[in-house]
Structure formats: structure tokens, C-alpha cells
Length: 524
Image (tube, rainbow, N blue to C red; front, top):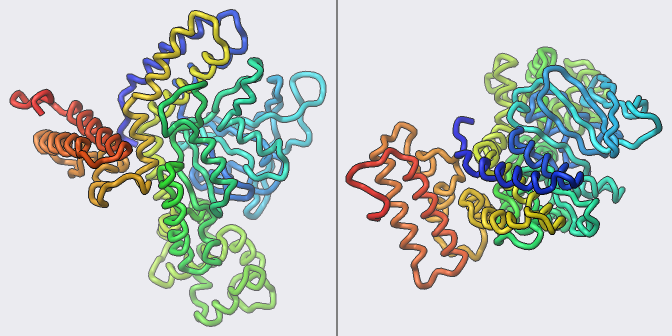
């Protein structure tokens, strides 16, 4: 991540929050909510992993971090919200609803489910038994230095309360605001939503996250995080573990993207084989040696042995790898990963580092990291400011009658009119059937509003070494083109708004370039 947006919106959000905190100095609940608003503006971006039960959230978290830090087996810890932050040494802390804490014992075992948080024997720092409200994990990991990842329970859990833990974090209900003492605000700045299939539950939940983000803000300011990226998770299973499984997953992702982006619910949809990505990041020499041995087995014999994971691990199947190790390979890599590893070795891969890199590339996780950097990382300040302003609007609405009331019009104006927010909203709507632009113009619009990155040369479609004169000329041409498109008499309201957004993005890019004496934006 090399480019960040200007911090002006963060400074303004800080000013508004600090002013409101002074007005609520004697009211504990709103004061605590606003203190959290202030802290989150200075902390790393908060990205929540959400999705249905067994969608693969914890496995994807491990693959993104590149370490085994999240339990993936169906234990009690997968039923609570867990915050993963960067820290000097590994530690896990349980928090009760009243703020009491307890250290959590971390246990490691073998196989794919190698990490467990023991929540059965907790010694709270206050008397009496308690339920766990959430877990906080500190872990030394480079990925967590700039991003706090929040692992959430499944949205389709059989337990309504388990599902509501995720809903409360991302989309507080209006009913929560009925009693001021229960008011809450979204805890995440952006969401990675995992999909195994696109059903009504997923659509409804994504609609709740996006409530109010595709329109001008009003009312209570209630809206979920502004950034949402979809992931077709466990993508290797879509093709039944065949070597072409990810091609099938990409077809599925395209169908999901067409539906979700058409309705503005996601800014992108990426297929990822999380199990393979994590196994590749932690590939062991013993496993590479086993893949080499399997690559030497005649194709027909190995194909017959790999009809299923159970058959592959059977002791009576004659293969040059012990049955126990075969079972471990199937558990860690899946049948798709084994087939891919063997194929790559047959094609010439000769060492474990190269194999790990090739498997990582084919898992889809690198593409996801790139999308997350463009959509979330480079816009971290805007996403955090949007969360803080949304929370501030909610607090001001639920707790009226103070001098802070005068801040609400300014907060709502910022939520509606800040150009970076408009870009993010539009990125989620470029596939809508209502946007009447030809494909080439849609691609240019996507690039101009930062869909490929927010650096000026990326927005303008120029090489990284393009000089200021070339960038300036391209930006001026873009301003003129998109202003003209916005004035087209047959353009509908949404298309006009999109064209004006593109023109403003080009103007913003032009303002970042060194000025030329003979050219001023006012002459355009």
C-alpha cells in the first residue's frame, strides 16, 4: 500500500466528534460511544469477515494473515465476535458484557484444526460466572499492523442470538435505539462478505449493511460500513475439487457479481480457495516431498486413488506416501490443492518455495489482497471517517437536547457530499442495468473514480512514469468529457450523477498535479 487519501475528512470528523464529546461530558453512555468514535479515527482500519455458517471465515483470516491464528473447528469460540489486532506477543483475552476480562488458554494440536481457544475454564478478574461477549486476540503479524480483522459468527446460525452478534456489530437495529441506554453503532469500517451460494439470507443481510449508503443520508444516520467486498469462499469445492475448480468458481463469482453489483450491494466479488491459500502459506518440506513422490505415480493410478478424500487416505491404496500423511494432506490442502500441487511439480516446479508461491497465486488470495488494498487500504481514512460520522449522527439523533444538536446538519452534509464517499457508493453500482453507458466508458469511469487505485496515474490510465504534463492533459480531457456526458439531454438521473462523479474525480486528480501557468481549471 503506497498511496493514501488526504486526511482532511479525518481532521473534520475529529473536530465534530470532539465538539460533541464536550456537549455530552456529563452523560456516560453517549460519552463512551463518542470516545470510541474518536479512538477509531486514530486506529487501524476495522474490517469484518461476515457470512453464513461454515462459509470459511476463519480459514480466510488465516490465509490473509499467513499464520495459524484463528481456530477453524466448530468450537464455542466461533460463536462469538473475535477481534484480531497487532501486538508484540500472542495473547487472547475474553471480555464479558460488563467489561470483566479473563485470559484465554490457547491450545495447539495437529492437522488443519491446530488451534483452539479454551473458553471452558476462564478465571475472570471479577467475582461470579459470566458469559463471553467477545474475544480480543493480539498477534505479531504485519497484516494486522494496518488492519484490525473482526471474525464474526455465521449470519445463518441456528442460534438467533449468535446470528444477532454479527448483526449488532455491522447493522444495529432501529429497535436498539428505542431505548437510549441500548443504542449502538456499527463496529466495522468495511466488510468482506463470504458467500457459498447467493440466497435470500445473504441478500437481506447485505441490504441491511448497505441501508442508506446508496442514497443521501438522513434520519438517524443509520447505515452499515461503506466498503463491502464479496468473496466466493471455499471456491475449490465448487468444482468438486477438480483441477479446473477455480474456473468454475470464477463463473459463479461472475454471476454473483452481476447480481450484487447490479444492486449496489458489493464493490467487487472474488473467488478464493482459502484452505489452499493458508496451506500454501504454511507449506512444510515434508509435504513438498510427499507431493514429489505422488507426482511420480502414473496418472491413471493416482486419479483412481483420488476419487475421494477417504479413498486417498486408505491404507490399502498403494501409494509412495504413508496413509497418515495422505490424510493430513487432504485435510490441509483439500483434493483440489493436492491435484494442483502434483500438476505443478509435473510441470517443472522443483522446490517448496516456488510451489508455495504458485499455489498461493492460484488460490485467489493475492487477487483478493489487491482488491482489498484498492477498495479498503488506500481509502482507509475515508472509510474510518464515514464510520465515525455515521456513529456521530446516530448518537446526536438518539440523544437530542444539547448544544451538539447544531452539529447534525453538518454531519449529514458530509455523509451526503464528501466526494470520496460518493466514489465508494458508485463503485458498488457500476453494473446496475440503470447506468446507461457503453462498456468502454464504464471501464474508464471505474478507473477514474479509483476502482483500480487512487494514485493519479492509475485513475488516468497512464504508466507510472508519465510526467505531469501528460497527466494534466489527460485529466483536463477527462473533465471535459464527463462534464459533457453529464449534460446529455437523454441521460437519466443515475447516469448523470455517475458522469458528474467522474468529472469531480478528474478535477480532484488535476488539483493534485503541479499547476501549469498557461492552464487553470477555471478555463475548462
